[in-house]
Length: 175
Image (cartoon, rainbow, N blue to C red; front, side, top):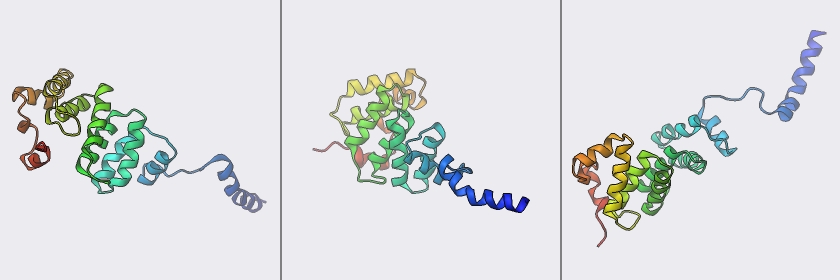
Protein backbone atom coordinates (compact mmCIF):
# COMPACT_ATOMS: atom_id res chain seq x y z
CA UNK A 1 0.00 0.00 0.00
CA UNK A 2 2.73 2.48 1.00
CA UNK A 3 4.70 1.65 -2.14
CA UNK A 4 1.62 2.39 -4.24
CA UNK A 5 1.11 5.79 -2.57
CA UNK A 6 4.80 6.70 -2.99
CA UNK A 7 4.73 5.59 -6.62
CA UNK A 8 1.61 7.67 -7.30
CA UNK A 9 3.15 10.70 -5.59
CA UNK A 10 6.38 10.40 -7.56
CA UNK A 11 4.42 10.02 -10.78
CA UNK A 12 2.41 13.15 -9.95
CA UNK A 13 5.41 15.25 -8.83
CA UNK A 14 6.23 16.68 -12.28
CA UNK A 15 2.60 17.77 -12.71
CA UNK A 16 2.61 19.35 -9.24
CA UNK A 17 5.82 21.22 -10.04
CA UNK A 18 4.27 22.56 -13.24
CA UNK A 19 1.08 23.61 -11.45
CA UNK A 20 2.65 25.03 -8.30
CA UNK A 21 6.06 26.13 -9.55
CA UNK A 22 9.42 24.82 -8.44
CA UNK A 23 8.81 22.84 -5.25
CA UNK A 24 12.48 22.87 -4.23
CA UNK A 25 14.06 25.99 -5.73
CA UNK A 26 17.80 26.44 -5.94
CA UNK A 27 18.72 29.05 -3.35
CA UNK A 28 21.77 31.23 -2.79
CA UNK A 29 23.33 30.49 -6.14
CA UNK A 30 24.23 32.61 -9.13
CA UNK A 31 21.90 30.61 -11.35
CA UNK A 32 19.00 31.45 -9.02
CA UNK A 33 19.91 35.14 -9.10
CA UNK A 34 20.12 35.14 -12.89
CA UNK A 35 16.77 33.33 -13.11
CA UNK A 36 15.21 35.83 -10.68
CA UNK A 37 16.50 38.76 -12.72
CA UNK A 38 15.20 37.17 -15.94
CA UNK A 39 11.76 37.03 -14.27
CA UNK A 40 12.08 40.70 -13.32
CA UNK A 41 12.64 39.98 -9.62
CA UNK A 42 15.14 42.43 -8.22
CA UNK A 43 16.07 42.58 -4.55
CA UNK A 44 18.90 43.90 -2.44
CA UNK A 45 20.63 40.51 -2.47
CA UNK A 46 20.13 39.93 -6.20
CA UNK A 47 21.41 43.40 -7.01
CA UNK A 48 24.40 43.12 -4.66
CA UNK A 49 25.34 39.81 -6.28
CA UNK A 50 26.13 41.74 -9.46
CA UNK A 51 29.33 42.87 -7.73
CA UNK A 52 30.56 39.30 -7.30
CA UNK A 53 29.49 38.46 -10.83
CA UNK A 54 31.43 41.34 -12.40
CA UNK A 55 34.47 40.74 -10.18
CA UNK A 56 34.52 37.16 -11.48
CA UNK A 57 34.88 38.56 -15.01
CA UNK A 58 31.32 37.82 -16.19
CA UNK A 59 30.63 41.42 -17.14
CA UNK A 60 27.77 40.77 -19.56
CA UNK A 61 25.89 38.79 -16.92
CA UNK A 62 26.64 41.52 -14.38
CA UNK A 63 25.28 44.08 -16.83
CA UNK A 64 21.99 42.17 -17.03
CA UNK A 65 21.73 42.12 -13.24
CA UNK A 66 22.77 45.74 -12.70
CA UNK A 67 20.63 47.11 -15.52
CA UNK A 68 17.48 45.38 -14.24
CA UNK A 69 18.24 46.59 -10.73
CA UNK A 70 19.05 50.14 -11.87
CA UNK A 71 15.85 50.33 -13.87
CA UNK A 72 13.98 49.30 -10.69
CA UNK A 73 15.57 52.23 -8.83
CA UNK A 74 18.51 50.59 -7.03
CA UNK A 75 21.02 53.46 -7.07
CA UNK A 76 24.01 51.26 -6.24
CA UNK A 77 23.30 49.35 -9.45
CA UNK A 78 23.22 52.66 -11.35
CA UNK A 79 26.73 53.48 -10.16
CA UNK A 80 27.87 49.99 -11.18
CA UNK A 81 26.35 50.43 -14.63
CA UNK A 82 28.36 53.64 -14.86
CA UNK A 83 31.52 51.76 -13.87
CA UNK A 84 30.89 49.12 -16.54
CA UNK A 85 30.15 51.70 -19.25
CA UNK A 86 33.05 53.96 -18.26
CA UNK A 87 35.53 51.10 -18.51
CA UNK A 88 34.07 49.07 -21.36
CA UNK A 89 33.28 45.98 -19.32
CA UNK A 90 30.80 43.72 -21.12
CA UNK A 91 30.21 46.31 -23.85
CA UNK A 92 32.21 49.03 -25.59
CA UNK A 93 33.38 51.95 -23.44
CA UNK A 94 30.64 54.60 -23.40
CA UNK A 95 31.36 57.74 -21.33
CA UNK A 96 28.00 59.28 -22.28
CA UNK A 97 26.08 56.28 -20.93
CA UNK A 98 28.30 56.22 -17.83
CA UNK A 99 27.54 59.88 -17.10
CA UNK A 100 23.83 59.27 -17.64
CA UNK A 101 23.84 56.47 -15.04
CA UNK A 102 25.71 58.79 -12.64
CA UNK A 103 23.15 61.55 -13.28
CA UNK A 104 20.26 59.19 -12.53
CA UNK A 105 21.87 58.04 -9.28
CA UNK A 106 22.62 61.65 -8.30
CA UNK A 107 19.07 62.77 -8.99
CA UNK A 108 17.81 59.86 -6.89
CA UNK A 109 19.83 61.28 -3.98
CA UNK A 110 22.65 58.73 -3.89
CA UNK A 111 25.86 60.26 -2.43
CA UNK A 112 28.11 58.14 -4.66
CA UNK A 113 26.01 59.12 -7.67
CA UNK A 114 26.35 62.80 -6.73
CA UNK A 115 30.10 62.41 -6.32
CA UNK A 116 30.56 60.53 -9.59
CA UNK A 117 28.35 62.90 -11.57
CA UNK A 118 30.22 65.81 -10.00
CA UNK A 119 33.46 64.29 -11.29
CA UNK A 120 31.90 63.78 -14.75
CA UNK A 121 30.91 67.46 -14.84
CA UNK A 122 34.27 68.70 -13.58
CA UNK A 123 36.11 66.60 -16.18
CA UNK A 124 33.65 67.08 -19.01
CA UNK A 125 33.57 63.30 -19.52
CA UNK A 126 30.31 62.15 -21.07
CA UNK A 127 28.73 65.55 -20.46
CA UNK A 128 29.64 69.16 -21.21
CA UNK A 129 32.17 70.42 -18.68
CA UNK A 130 30.67 72.46 -15.83
CA UNK A 131 33.19 72.77 -13.01
CA UNK A 132 30.93 74.88 -10.77
CA UNK A 133 28.03 72.43 -10.98
CA UNK A 134 30.44 69.54 -10.48
CA UNK A 135 31.84 71.09 -7.31
CA UNK A 136 28.31 71.71 -6.04
CA UNK A 137 27.52 68.01 -6.40
CA UNK A 138 30.79 67.06 -4.70
CA UNK A 139 29.78 69.37 -1.84
CA UNK A 140 26.36 67.69 -1.61
CA UNK A 141 28.01 64.26 -1.47
CA UNK A 142 30.37 65.51 1.26
CA UNK A 143 27.47 66.94 3.25
CA UNK A 144 25.85 63.49 3.07
CA UNK A 145 28.99 62.06 4.68
CA UNK A 146 30.83 60.54 1.71
CA UNK A 147 34.51 60.43 2.81
CA UNK A 148 35.99 60.58 -0.70
CA UNK A 149 33.99 63.75 -1.39
CA UNK A 150 35.38 65.32 1.77
CA UNK A 151 38.87 64.28 0.69
CA UNK A 152 38.37 66.03 -2.66
CA UNK A 153 37.15 69.18 -0.89
CA UNK A 154 40.20 69.08 1.41
CA UNK A 155 42.41 68.82 -1.70
CA UNK A 156 40.80 72.01 -3.07
CA UNK A 157 39.03 69.90 -5.75
CA UNK A 158 42.29 68.63 -7.24
CA UNK A 159 41.04 65.60 -9.16
CA UNK A 160 44.42 63.88 -8.80
CA UNK A 161 43.51 63.39 -5.13
CA UNK A 162 40.82 60.87 -6.08
CA UNK A 163 41.97 59.55 -9.45
CA UNK A 164 44.88 57.16 -9.96
CA UNK A 165 47.45 58.75 -12.26
CA UNK A 166 47.22 55.64 -14.45
CA UNK A 167 43.78 56.88 -15.52
CA UNK A 168 44.86 60.41 -16.49
CA UNK A 169 44.82 59.51 -20.21
CA UNK A 170 41.12 58.70 -19.93
CA UNK A 171 40.15 62.03 -18.40
CA UNK A 172 42.16 64.32 -20.66
CA UNK A 173 39.67 66.44 -22.58
CA UNK A 174 39.67 65.93 -26.33
CA UNK A 175 41.15 68.88 -28.20
